[in-house]
Image (cartoon, rainbow over the protein chains, first blue to last red):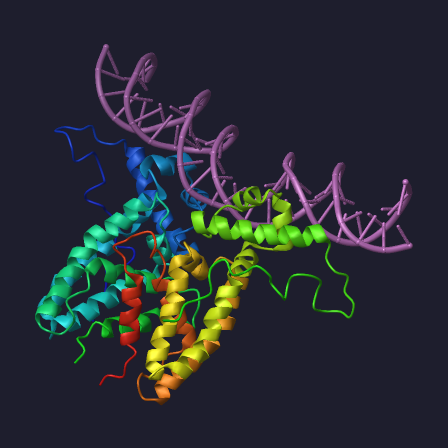
Length: 210
Length: 210
DNA sequence: TTGCTAAACGGAACATGGTTCCGTATCGTC
DNA sequence: GACGATACGGAACCATGTTCCGTTTAGCAA
């Protein structure tokens, strides 16, 4: 069974740790700034687990022992903080797509397993799904990141399954992913609601009518 | 084609207009209070159309030419106001269930049409679907009202279709309705997202595997 | 080691939105 | 016309996201 990397697997973020990628010899960040960013990411991850992604910024700042201004200097908007916290897991999910396609019996099986991965991710992140769909500007970067990274993967899986004649070919990855994301909303707040089940039905509905 | 009553069909609300239903000779409400409640409902309906159900309470009060306190006296919480505004249409939807069942070729067709009715309702009410799923306490009454009124209808349709051997019998109405509601979130803010389509797929997924 | 400055910090202050409270105005009755 | 119950308006309160700015500090150079 495929699983995403551990939630605590974001110790060192190679891209954002020090200095900007642009410019030849851009001055590297001050040590305390780098340290604070790490502290902040850990605090946010921890608070997200207990209070959900909609936890007040002040709570995260408090947990990190830092002022709110510090958060906004490192992460221009809350969405950027969320992206940073979950980047590794989203990357893992994106990379799992081609791997599943290569290792599964059928493209449809790969698609199904990949969607499961995505659902598991969303369902275990209290409130993430809801925030993902919020039309609130300011979450635009969050929205964009998820879509930019995952839609191409989903497209690839959908096309493979369609080419194999397993599913209808008139459903776009963007629409499907948003649908799946929507179905995951509130999955953790009501035990009677079974998001995984509904997603299964949705995927079942993709099958070509016999 | 079945359609819900016009959005402006809530002129006189027989139940809540004057006096309480409890008590033998409960004193009837003052005329200005009754008038204000009507004005408020009209203003809210109008604001909901242009700014969505999440419009600030102050906006509704302003539109009605009334203080915010007045809103809260008539409607203890925002959710109560929303319920009051849409009560007629929800009732119409609930009543359409048995009617469709009686007039359709198959129970599955009735179910499908009824779900369409529900989806049309949600999709045309900017932001309603999102608010419906909000786990924010305070929207409990809204949540409860929709579920109390519509789940039994949906259950009836599901059971009829299951008894006819058209669909699987292991999906509860509550789960299905929440799923459909979720799929409708954000349907009006992004033209690329096609909630109706996804709901169709979900309903298709209910069919017994051949 | 000491001094200096850009960088970073903290948290008060501001903006927005839901909700409560209470002094005032009004209705309906006597 | 007077009076008590009812309803009204909107200021005030609380919670939250975000910005701003005076203060502190890291890192470098003399």
